[in-house]
Image 1: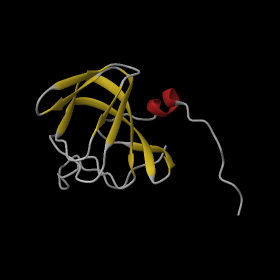
Image 2 (image 1 turned 30 degrees about the horizontal axis):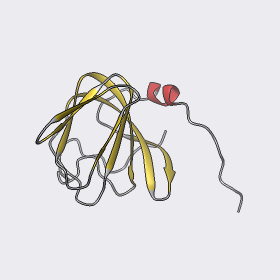
Image 3 (image 1 turned 90 degrees about the horizontal axis):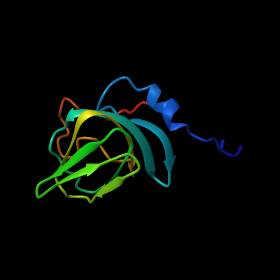
Length: 125
């Protein structure tokens, strides 16, 4: 069996392929983790992840991560890690391009498995 291909990923190019919101796409995998890209717009649902920590990094635009005790605003080049079990809700007042890094088992709506926004079979870019 041959070695896997080693290729760079151009985030601008990948984000140009995304034309909807709150629908993460897989752009890479390593050590049981996935690198995902999504465009955020408007408020998401309050939820938490029982077993997974989540990493959110803003590439373009900005968004707020609402936590029960505070709101953290993320600008381009900034990231936030939401620990497992912490209830949170991302809110983007204008479109934001966001890179996420999380275990492959992570479902975007966490404990809200039957939400209209739940995505379980993610497209790969």
